[in-house]
Amino acid sequence: MGKFVIEGGQPLKGKVKASGAKNAVLKLMAASLLSDTPCFISNVPKIRDVFTMVEVLRWMGAEVDFDGDHRMFINPKVSKAEAPYDLVSQMRASIIVLGPLLAKYGKAKVAMPGGCNIGSRKIDLHLKGLESMGAEIEVKGGFFEAKTKGLRGTLVPLDFPSVGATENILMAAVLADGETVIENAAREPEIVDLANFLNKMGAQIKGAGGTSIKIKGVRRLKGVNYQVIPDRIEAGTFLIAAAITNGEVTVEGARSEHLELVISKLREAGAKISEKDNEVTVSLSKRPQAIDVAVLPFPGFPTDLQPQITVFLSLAEGISIVTENVFENRFLYVDELNRMGTDVRIEGHHAIIRGVSKLYGAPVKATDLRGGAALVLAGLAAEGETIVSDIYHIERGYENFKEKLEKLGARISIIE
Image (cartoon, rainbow, N blue to C red):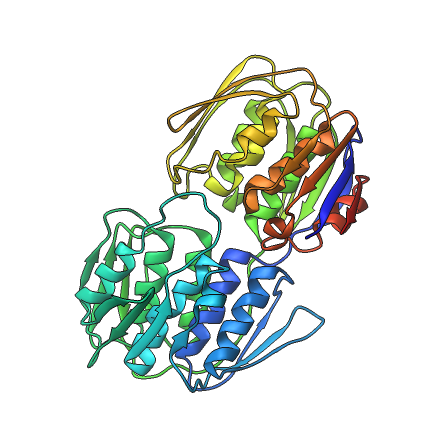
């Protein structure tokens, strides 16, 4: 149970490289279960969630080798189509194995998922979509028990563009009989990455990245070599960190087309930004201006960067409003943030932020992955010492966070 100890007041300067995308690689690992032969995945981040997913696959009987150079080998032949509670409870993305197991083995038993307590991310859209394709699903003793005599293609209209539901249905559909069309599909870059991975394996998917995805089922898939896209949330976190600390940071691997609204909002607040191929630089030498931000599914402002931008705006001149339209409990970190001198008030799904001129170091607790990262960013900008506890949340999604911040000049250490 480590803690970050941060001495604030040091502008971040330099260059940092974004790791592979957490929200892409976990789905690629699950998708490998659909293959008849081994897969090789590169640019895999060394984060807690990846190691948890490795254990999920190994528990099923798959052979997984994760070396020291961010490369992963997966032999997907499993002996049991199950995902146990003690692993699934650690990471919500574990539910994503449901679709591949159903499609490949005709059955699956997956524990109800855990992960960050940021809202009621319902699984009903996953289940409804899979049932419409011919799955029979029951909830027994905290598990989803699913079976099918064969999935069949159909029209699956989603009530909400859920990323997880889109991915689960997409993976199930690639081995289904006939054509599946997902309407109101999520458009995130990680879904495009998953579709590219599956198409390279032999799937027939068109329209990923748009609101309508068409999947023509095939009989089998083969293993491939594939490189994970860079993590846009990690990249955005470092770009916002540069602005919060009045520094100048270049993020290698930051794809501006994945961060258009984040870049736009930072510019609107007064930051200077330059964009090159797979590289973005942010600098800011004064207090930011207050702006309003509304969180929406991609291509809107990402919910996973809402806590970070809220910290940034807590130092702005004027009053900002941040509206969270995805997860109702995403503001859990605000009580901890206000211990550092911010003036943030929550009204429903809005954060009313009255900017202050400075923050002050304090002991705070990470409430979840992104809220924890935001508290670290607040500590970097604050006067004095900040101690962030429960950093295991942060380690779920950021690779070498301390080391990367140190490289940029942050004064940060870990105590056990």
